[in-house]
Image (tube, rainbow, N blue to C red; front, side, top):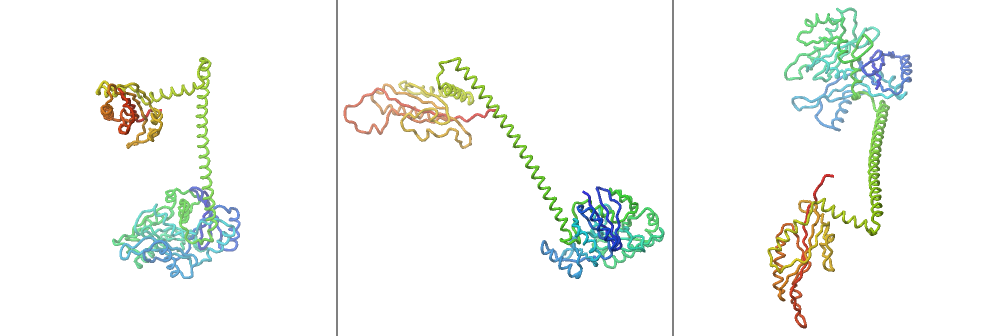
Length: 538
């Protein structure tokens, strides 16, 4: 995304754009009515591209202050109160917490900044608001210089020295000196620089660095650490003055660590592409500003950058709408794909139904005497076969156990008839022997056990009698009870007595008339065996 950069000094306003890693040539606007008219025409040509405004002025003040360590809203109110006390009449102020003290109460270290002359911004700001240009923010160039320190030699105390554009008609350039403690800005100085020859340039630069060094020592800015550390001076300059500085720096700045870096070499290190041959500090800061998606605004008021806020809000709505549209499209595609699969499955089932119907029609034609309920009959046969095949159930095992139990009892205990079947519930296997159905007859077979395993039932109904009891029903009852107890010893067998050869309740009832002689006692027993479902691969 293209971004426009405004660089303002006390002398002029420069406008250039950044596209990718390339900075275009700057367009100057003088600080007068003619410059304002030119700036208005410049803004009217493009009212959509956002503007990032860099300030590089001598009318910016810096203060370091200690604040009690608090959080959130209390911290914000404390900082605002401190700004009002330090800069009573200033309109444009900014404050930031840079860390905490290492000793004592461990108060917060705050940097407080202000523009002493708001008229410096007003003419240009009025035009930006008039054309409704999205203003991202108004930034202090020395404060944004912190972003360059990660590309420079690291040190606790750093003095960054670099060139700025001319500060007036009588100066060839400016010299910006910014002091950082632990990579955080403490103060900055901007002085005019007259470059006549390399010798005079070297003397002037070294003298200004010595002046700043003495000031830092006198204000005890270099004693903020328990263990003393030398001041690291980083000088960004052209190749023309680099060799002269190398010869003089050791004798002019004793005790300091000095790093000389050629401007074009540093530009290549950043990856910046620029057309001009004269490089200034604002080129690197502007490039670093556009490489990050967000920077805290320093001086712009909410009413001054409201159009940038509207722009960001509009972009957020567009992006959210795009996400919703993409999500709806993907969901619709998934629904359509699922509908196609369901349709294919339905078509497959329909084809199978037609095929089975054709086979059934052929069967009817082949066997005309087939009963009308043949479909139900065939289905029942298939269901029984499916049960047996699917669950591998054969009556042989149960019958063998039953025969073993019968062999252990007298021969007069006779088995007359045996019914066998499988089903989901007891009523599916046998009809109730009596007219009243037990509540357990309709209990579903696939209810879960303690181990949560579904099961089905295998059932046997035994019709039997006890011969030659010679009217001794009590003896028959004893033999029947032993047979029942024997059956109950078999694991997983559930025994239900449907009919008993002897009912004590009936025996105790009185009877008028002759005694009814009988030589046999009949009984009916249901045996149910639970079988878990066998999981088979589909």
